[in-house]
Length: 458
Image (tube, rainbow, N blue to C red; front, side):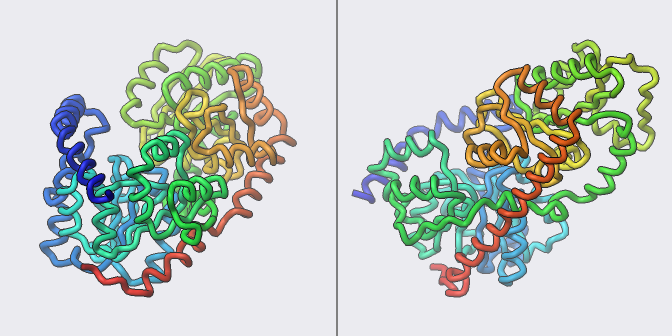
């Protein structure tokens, strides 16, 4: 039955492939982010960095394949990868799906020799694509960060006796329901996973019900608590000091990972603060979640009244000069964060942070990043992806969940103008981070048995 189901799966992929190719070509012509690297995901052998590495005989070493979908998963993995590199003298094959993730990884490991880390786009789950990548790399262990389930890949890895592990494992309600609905097929896929290291008990129960053996599931916490700013944010202190020197004459609000509809909400709240608290200048940094929206958000801001707009790329220029003497008393200054990877710097200098994807139904984004800098975090009710963390944050009062524009304004007012509330939230947030560190090391300890065993590649 298993072989028949995998055959049907591949027949369906072949049937859908013409539509898939057409869609990707259209996305590519439209310069849509979904087309980024699609040719290399389909034909890995065409990827020049991978080809060059093989020609130099450096990619055929035994190594560890780590897959992190995008920027969030990569950031969560950095400390783990560092621990892994320090303990095992093995090549790291690091794959990602998005251009943002790929660029982040390339920049982070730009000083690493090819014999150390090889970065490439994760292949589509077409049988020939998966077979192709495994002709170019030689993993002794495959590690998926935060749960990526690919039937053909897992099937081929298992046949080659390559262990499969999922770390920082979580699964959304939507995906969970889909896997249950098609459990007649996916139970064979989940059975191929050797180890699942979960964020919490909620996810342990989900993986258990999907077919993972009880003895192969463990709770090790969330690697996002282990975020090492020194490793992932080059020059953050220098840039933070520059921004602090420029914007030290007012209150700073950071709006990170915003989606369409949220820029308007946070802007209105900032304008209202400028109107009601005229003695202070309000500086609002807005960092859209998706880089392709930079121009769209800038055009929206240009049409707004009572604000002065700058781009962060301009602020960083040597000749930048902020002259607030020419601005009106109740005018809000807005800085569009138009450089990828600068959000952590903005969190470092702000008084309070709003994390987007939460006032619109996008599932929320990383609520922990502002807390690392001791900053209170404000978020909306759509935080399905971080529900447990959000619950803990509100419980210890390290931040606030808001349900309306007025609630957003009230929360900003509290943290900006109530020093006791700000200090208490900062202390609670830092304590939460400190008490939950160590997941990366726990994950490494569980995985050591596979690496010490020296699994053979066949």
